[in-house]
Image (cartoon, rainbow, N blue to C red; front, side, top):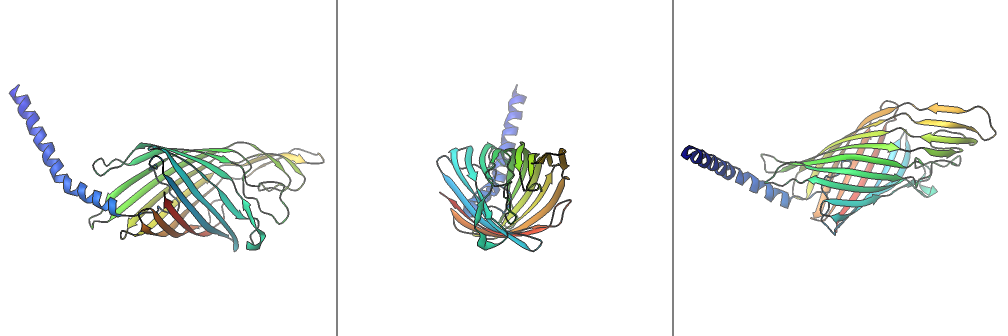
Length: 310
């Protein structure tokens, strides 16, 4: 029995020594995390949740440039900490009704947000923060019965989005922080009724139904805390969209028309710079660059965002 006690004592001493050896590194990470300020990168979402009773707002403004045409718009995140490990919120979207600034704004699809945190990163317990995501897309944007010079800004279909967000912190040898994020999202669309000219390429006399293809999004991002206020960030996003099926016929009758759009995929990246003038307020300036993909056009999207924790 004394050998058991001796072994246990030796193991305890070894664990104490290891903890003592690790303690300065843990303290250094704690200090760095308290001092650093972040807004978050341009595309990847956090895996953290808001403390109970607190709000987070992040409106952002952008201009999607495709083939020389400009499509200015706005969106953002408006969230509330329902519980310490559960955040809810919504994401509206707006865009110009055409590709000209003087034609007014149109509403896009509206997204309801929810995120449940499963694990939480701390310096003394360095496992990644992991959260489950469940969102619902509400088709508030106009998608059909479009005028000749009007653009659609929605799918017309309800959609459910499920996914997982991961976030981890790394203390570099120079004492600065590197924060990494991974988002994986899968969106499933329902069918929607289509009438007339629409985002699905139908003509004025068309009547039928459409079902957008499922969409998979994978985002990886890293942020480097250059100083306590300035942060350099970059995202890489890959999108995979399935076939969209449209079935219907012209209003005057005739044969049943069926179309099946090809699947598409693209990979883009978005360098950005963050400035945080207080622990609760910051701004981000970045650009999302998508080279031409498979059945997907190239685009450049400069954007600015203002984040505020309440």
